[in-house]
Image (cartoon, rainbow, N blue to C red; front, side, top):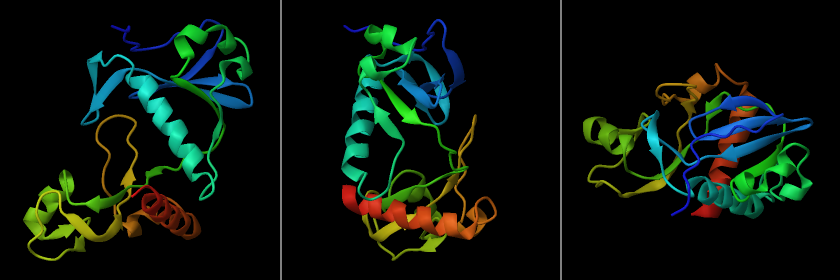
Length: 195
């Protein structure tokens, strides 16, 4: 069985952030994202990981970045370790398959979620209020039902603790209207492409 990578330490590299799943390093004009095998559920990082989880997540991300680049530009540069700057190009055994060099960008302070099915916390809200993210839904839907149309349901991005669902109106207090409308439209286009 493969080793579980719960954290990375690359000598000579500056670690910028250790998130719930990813370790992020400064790579000069770029960033190096390293996806570990850590498990995060309900915003809690577990003490055990899943072997090769980071590799699977990285390859899925790479696939979708390549599939959706014609809809919206993304930050992916390469996952070819020989193209990484030093010292990262010296750590192929650790980084192969689970890392990518990406452009430095300014992340949005909101999470853009599109829901096409009634499940999870959405099912709980529907049972109580017959709404999803405060949007009225028809009666008679079941857990796992496809929604009449996909819904954009933004959330806050918590560094620690739980992300919080927010209304589009509250999103407008965090980002400007043009940004909010742009990410709303891109989110729905990306969902439609993958659905």
